[in-house]
Length: 348
Image (cartoon, helix red, strand yellow):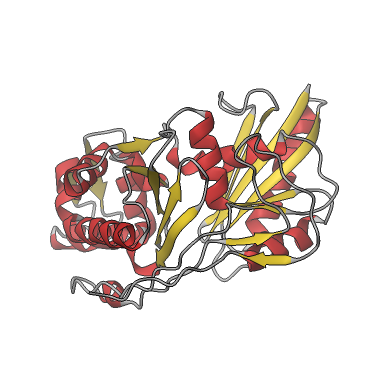
């Protein structure tokens, strides 16, 4: 059987999915999540994930014919390509992988635009994409509004009840609320306990959720076409209470895969399944992306909310554009082709 490997990488680590080339949307043969060690290189968890999946393939006496890894910018693409070896992988722009998988599973509309709401551990990334042409209309990132702040808020809340915990344990409690309505947190030192409900979590996260919704509207206002659909990505999207609150705040239909944290890796699978590549290349959403220079949100609950809004252009290509008709990756030419950056309208 022909196996393909898709890998996504973020600040918190790497996720890998191994499956047959004709079954990218079905339960995988194997997968893994490799957390990133503090201050370790970004490529370290990627290498670990790839090695682990190759070991899993050998145990089945099967061969991985294609590997694709998502990246968030040109620098990541170069580092990943250098680490894994040119000619062995396809490096894919992360929003493109996300859009490709959501379209493959028929979760995206065929017209209008979608806002990719990617809530990672370290920050919130918003990327608005035209559903018909795969053009990036706007893209911005806020490092202070990631899942880590939700864990921090939960730690503070538990402290008031005499339950001391760290952000890692708080993250486990938060994740547990995705499948359970109620969880019990315990202090390992004192054995004191506190009950956390989904409603408690939503109330705690009211401020960051409202700020995120405001940013969605502002990014959409700066693009050529208002967003008509919101695609929730990242592990935080698993929580139904948080999804419901965002739906109320935004007033737009939400799209959420059953495993939102694996959408990028599964999108990479679709590129890995296309054909073996002759060299490392990046397939990227078409030119037309706009960097939106928005002022940083200041909401005052935690100092992280006052962090500067670091706006990044997710529109940059490395030797390849995705065609809307057949989705093939064009041959690499060995040049970095920057996405056209449109001048954003001034702040009102």
